Length: 325
Image 1 (cartoon, rainbow, N blue to C red):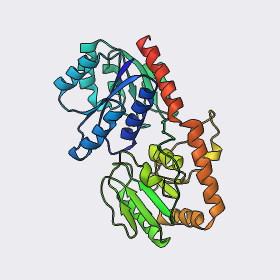
Image 2: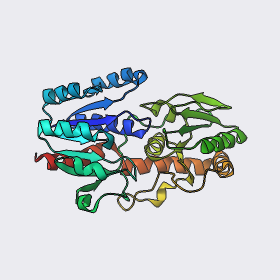
Image 3: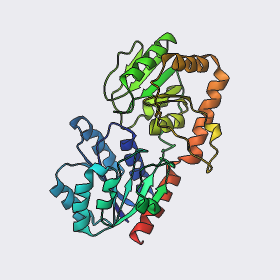
């Protein structure tokens, strides 16, 4: 089976999701090809490194994308960004294949879903997806994010490091200031994975990373939202939820497998407060038993709910149903 996975470049977990899923599907024998538009030049070489696992291209020109699509003779288009709906329409009209979409935000604008001919499925990694038109809800499939547990794994941790994964548009300047102040008061080293630097007092700025496992595997606590938290927990981090608001410690033991899935957006009306963040950081710094318990439970939660092997199998079943294979 041959599947085209199409998206714009994002400074968010969307990229890690697509690249991980393509690798997981490829290991199952699915011919997954990734095409990323609007890829910054600094990341094009990083994308090319994925060629050892599956075909992966940075390409903006629709005519070239159409040529590649004809070359690979795809059975299915999996769209990961609805802003590319016009390009998707052109591909679908030319190839005459079914398509599906993954909505990567809980409140993704979904009106242009009706513009996609042959729409067979709508995947959401959030069970409480909102804004899906009533006429399309029967196509909705909940599949959590998949994390490669062999890549994202704990490593020996030296010192006490906190990793902040700041997606573009996923946090506020006020929130970043609150986190920096809390980390400074606790005298903690802050590892920053973010498109733009912040005024760190102690720590390192890594820029945005397509693979954050080398940083996360050595830290004790991850701060962020959505996929960043899952990858952090897989690497043995306790998790603090922070998006545009602060959601506190994530207690994964409250979400047994198969029964419910947590809201990890960090959305809320109240801006993050440095006092709340400082209290949680200092609590985990002082209470080693609580820290280790959260780290172990977090890794277990990802293993039970987000193992890439199981997620790739589930996605493959959706693909085969859509393509009639």
